[in-house]
Amino acid sequence: KNALNHLRKIVIEYLESKCEQKLSGQTTSEILRNLNSFSGEKKQLLKEVLEECDQVRFNPGAADLFSAQKTLKKFRMLLEPEPGQPVE
Image (cartoon, rainbow, N blue to C red; front, side, top):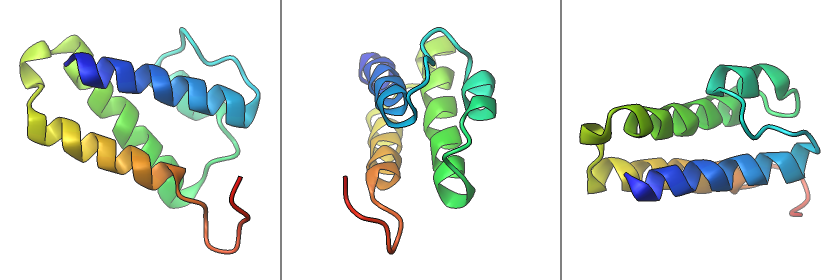
């Protein structure tokens, strides 16, 4: 549970630096609505990561090691550059 709460904070910080927007304190729906720089598969991955973090935050019994590892893997995929885009 704690790892996914921490991951959510990391995701928010990453998004704020990448998109130059203040996203702290916003709900997952608000964040997704405000992000125009993500689309397609990346936006879907972002949605899944944030929702999975929320699920654990609001239902602590839902946390297990396997689901946390799965969510972390999705976050890593989110960090990968799109084909043809330069690596930052």
